[in-house]
Length: 247
Length: 214
Image (cartoon, rainbow over all chains, first blue to last red):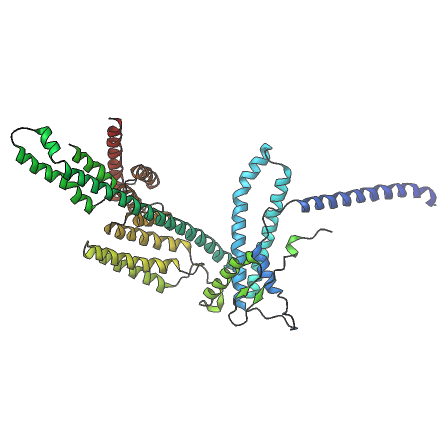
């Protein structure tokens, strides 16, 4: 015969033990989840995703019952932009991962940062899956190529940005060069005037018997820089010519 | 309760114009993304089923047009070294560049790089023919941006333009990095020219130093 009364004691003991462990575990997990969700997200708000989802759930205009139907083209464009944003984020995550794990091993960064990073990584993976599903829903088979297209779009945008920046720099260079050219030209004019004013100076230093012929050579020399200077104006040229003028 | 960020989104106040299919929003932050969106949507109209085709397939017509512009520009440069033909070449290359840069954004970036590297480099040459040094320098730099290795001509052109503008020191640095990128062992005429330009720059800087020291 089983003594039920004396058996209740070990069962009660087991029950209390398991119960308290379960309570502790669930409380602990809840707290941990709450803590990690209060951590600042790695990335800012994903505007492209918000636009796409807002388009899907467009509010009906006041006075109308049905919400306006969004054309497929608009949705596809929005989804493509969302994919581009995801590419940007996943590249950032990939680039940061190695460096961050190194820093974590050395203890240079806190665990919080690592937690935030892992969460971002998990989120982006889910986001990619979501985009592929949406793409396949909009157009069968698009899910396979949407990220290829998005990748090209991302790199195209970077390239064009860079080219625009270089061309803008070229424009400001052009303005600088206009002023520089003008100042070089005015220098030439001054040299020309000086050259005309004192053709006697080098002649007198040379002095001597054949004044006439010396004057001729001086005139040719002082004429030289202006003629060639007008053809190709360059600083390198000026200094060389100036040297020639000095002798 | 905590909410999963993947299940939620921020609802944005968007309005859709049913005729033009363009979107608008009272939030100023959204103006740029929405304009881009409308542009992309218009670009997508040209594709079958309004979905971008896989990047491997491109429109051969555009490539042919761009190549034609480049060939015509080259022919114009070869015809004579006058200012007028240089300007004509600049115009032709500019058309080609416009076509290359307005390719649909989902087309392979590598293709754009190849085409633009050539066009920018050639336009730099045409500008040099017209003695428009700053424009030529900017174009040569763009060409290098598109294609860093195996682009010795563009490296040389920008170096030369900087010399012509009297920015010798900058030119020296530029040519040095060009030689670094092109690699020491790779021979060929382009590299020799780059080495020659480096010599010229070094000689000039030495001369300047001596004059300054005197």
